[in-house]
Amino acid sequence: MPNLWPARIVCLSAEAVDILYRLGCQSRIVGVTGFAPAPAAARKPRVSGFSSFDFDKIAALKPDLVITFSDVQAAAASELVRRGHTVLATNQRSLAQTYQAILLLGRAVGCDRKARRLIEQMTKAIRDCRRATRDLRQPRVYFEEWDRPLISGIGWVGELVEIAGGCDIFPELRGRARAPDRVVSVEEVVRREPDVIVASWCGKKVDIQAIRQRPGFSTLPAVQRNHIYELKSQDILQPGPGLLKGLRQLRRILDSWRREL
Image 1 (cartoon, one colour):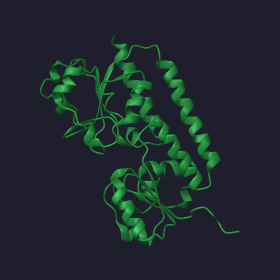
Image 2 (cartoon, helix red, strand yellow; image 1 turned 180 degrees about the vertical axis):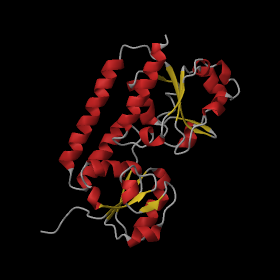
Image 3 (cartoon, helix red, strand yellow; image 1 turned 90 degrees about the vertical axis):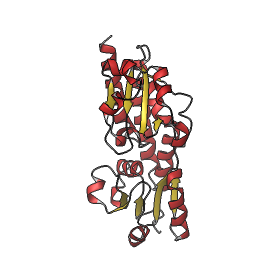
Image 4 (cartoon, one colour; image 1 turned 135 degrees about the horizontal axis):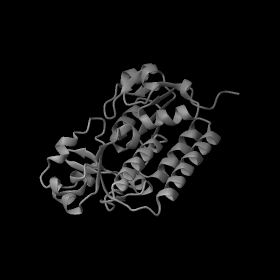
């Protein structure tokens, strides 16, 4: 009987690499994004950035499945289909959709049972954190995904802020999938008076001093009490199992704020 599962997989998104490694499918990955986590980043050929792609290099790897993520990679997915590749595109924007994406990838590679166990591990960790922080005082948290223009956190980030025991100051925006739809003004951030600022600038280093020096920010509790933090984008902006690391960091940050009360 022929092998029904893809044996040569190219991952154009970092969370897909992470998921497949955790499912024990690392030997099937033949190409990765430049943002792939270790150890894949060091061991696999890099064939893309997040919005840039080497289609000839992808073709040379002879994949039987290419995995993409989000509307940002929609044009690339379309081009890959035109070139004759089989493409699986995920577009998760919430924790629930992240679980669904893990299950979808698990089914696609014949590891449905392992995918379910991975989801159970994630949901337990999240449930335990939510239970531990439920009755604690909640700081107002401004999560910044980009600085020019200012972009507030996407859906799963707002969920993680709340699970860690914080209050997302832009809850009405996090359901908006496109980053341009989550642009906020300096004045509106100041008006909402965050106690904590957490920034993760999509792969570039956060300039905490520049945040401090924005007009009006000197009045913010977060600035006055020195509660401005950076989280690496791979720990909070890649919607896969790695989000648990970001959740642990968020909880430590908010616990540090509480200790000063």
